[in-house]
Length: 365
Image (cartoon, rainbow, N blue to C red; front, top):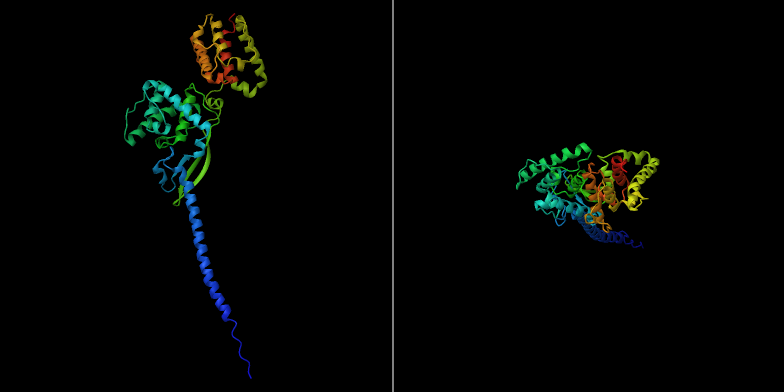
């Protein structure tokens, strides 16, 4: 009797294979859908990361900035940098300075990029600072007219700044495009060149987002942009004198110079029973400078013209500025130092002022 043939064991595995295939397909479909969703979410997150700084609600970016041509790029300030206290202070100081300069023009600037982009305020600012009239149309509504005015104004600015070594970090398109970084570079340069009576915060840097379009895709990079260094370095771009050389190359001789100047000032201040031992601190409030000028020129300075016991920064700046006026009345040139630098204990600035006095009055008894 022949044995019954065994049932082919291949049937069950074949069935399992079908089940595995079905489940595999189902699982693969689910996995692909999950992966596709992850990719979609990732792309959305990436797109948000790129477009977030371009939100029209931020002051730097406008709706058209989200539509880039191939190889075109836009720059904007990282939102976190806008909250930096030093960055906010820089903007406030510059706005207050512009409004002080243009107070007689009845111009009030509230937002730099919105108020300066068309060239109107920049024209008035430069005319006031440089004491010259620019040959431009007073009011221009069209974009072409605005850019033409800007071109004229910026050319006049460049003529002033280039001989002193300033790097030009702005142009007509960036200013008219309301690029706040370019506008800040321009205003800082003007403030330094015209020796504005303000104290710019030092070492102000911001993170800038650069968005480029390459092969139809938006690409972003972050770079750090330096807006201010130190006052000394910014002024030093176009102002080098014996004191720069002294500080940089002969610091050992600095004590000799200080001793000579202390002897000179005490020779006169001793008449009022006053004595100086520290140049950088004791002249910072301007009181000794004012009294010294009265002694050197042999007149009494009315006490209501300055603060005998100044308490605030502004009162000290007033005193030093008043002393500078007395120096100019006495035939000296306008001091190279700024009143704010003297008040802020900048030794080199204080030495420059006192050395000018020493040079003229060293033989006065």
